[in-house]
Length: 98
Length: 366
Image (spheres, rainbow over the protein chains, first blue to last red):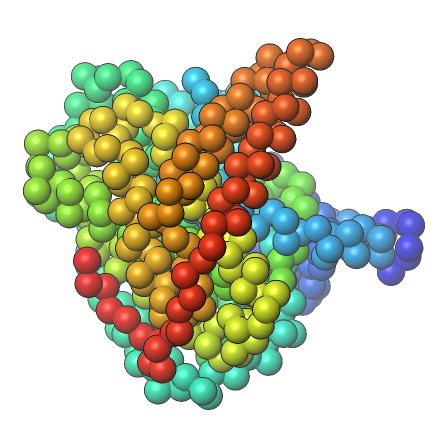
């Protein structure tokens, strides 16, 4: 992990998108066991996976993981906590005025 | 869990995907679900040892495994017809915001819990997160169906957009999700009981499902309460007590501000927002005595005035931001200062000390 330069990794992945009444979910799994760390960026290649209602799509894709630099990682670890409000549910969006 | 800006990417996505999207639903709008992605210290979570609360842990996990709500999230004859066309546009807008935000929150919870299950190696923890992820995906699917009826299609195309992973320490996840799940329970059960007494205000059938629904939220909260009990430092150390107070004030005041911006929604429910929010705080605080060593004094004479000051400041901040330019930025900066002062006022209200009971577990009782 370099201090100032970002590295990129191309990894195979499996995406699963469920757009069903019983379950609405979407997940990405890296098939080679790659691990995402704080500040890394993940991009799944290809067209958006559009599951129609009632459909579950499981597809093999390729993803690029852009590794955060050591500084970015440290920064994300130090400041990430301040975004904790994102973990809370408030029933409404943050928009206050129409 | 907080929704992320579902409006900002709306237009962008609409133009990009309008012709490819789900054509079976008569969608008049699409809303991109845009969850955030998190990492945490998975090694630390793997080291959690539930031995001190093993008996209660096993009982809770057995209950979650039995999946008491499996059959609940189905549309039955109780799901009355909704007159979306005839709904007041202001109410419709706020209610759609409620559904989209709730759906995004459930969905983000599902992504977070699933990630924790997948990255972890501790079997107790992995099992817990698999049940919670299951529940959240189910809730999200149920809300999504209500949105479809309203002509709003949810779009899951976010996976192919670049996503940056942010980071939370495990204890922040415990505090935030514990509070979030318990507040969720208190919010839903308060509305449910109110509509039981005043069914004429039930303007949508989804509220009939809130009782069993919030029992899921309740038991998720129980799991985080047990997790916090595995390490006394998490709730007893001096600096963690300050963090807990910070979380309580931040979460309560945010809820106050957001609810007060939804006048039509609460008017249609026949709910006075001041009363409702205080009632939710009261229930949440009572429940949180199971694990938190302090309790916010919501009957303190400074509490409601400071919340109102915070609300006014937040509205001015947003107005300033929308206006832009030098005057808008100045307005925003001054309002931010007022919001910080209001927050400090809330934070400085003395707390009530509490000694959590020996046994953590609670059952939903409201």
